[in-house]
Image 1 (cartoon, rainbow, N blue to C red):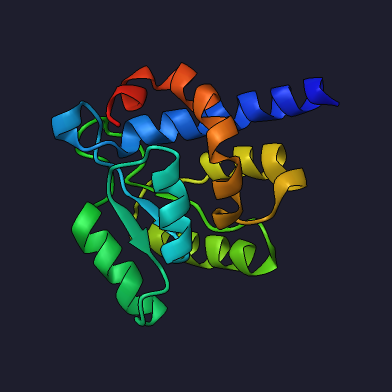
Image 2: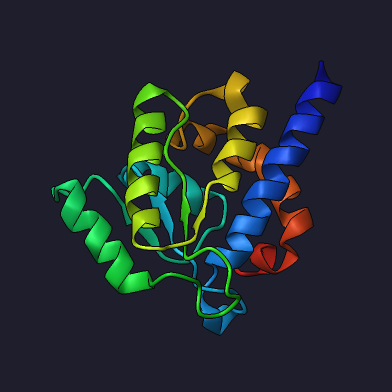
Amino acid sequence: MSNNRDARYTTAGRALGEARIRNRPTASGGCGCPIIVEGRNDRIALESMGFIGPTEQVNRGWDQSRFVTYIFETYGILNKVDQGASVILLMDWDRTGGRLQRKIGERLEAFGMKIDHETRMDLVRAMKPEGRTVEGLKPHAEKLRPYIDMVDSDGAEEE
């Protein structure tokens, strides 16, 4: 059982570590790639795992069209630093989150934006037993941090 958890935390840690590197501001050696989450508690959960770069919240009182336009106008088609995905789309892995991931992803991609869906898919596979939300990662942050720091050792020093 603990072997299974170790393997899952390794997978989740790798995905989160790679995302944390891309998310870190350029002044700190990252790409400044924003992570799009559903709400405030999701942002707080990411911060508990050492994320310090831009985080955009879908739930901010805007309709989806305004939000998608804002993301496109702010971040563009590709990340200017590494030419990778322009944003990391990280909705919860429940039914509502899946719907949001698909709808927002399709709308951003209609603008020609390159979107990172892989981070979410890795977390869906690895963290389902622990919960179905980004916010639900927070209670596991302390256990996940060593796995994240193995991939992103610079993030461990930022604290």
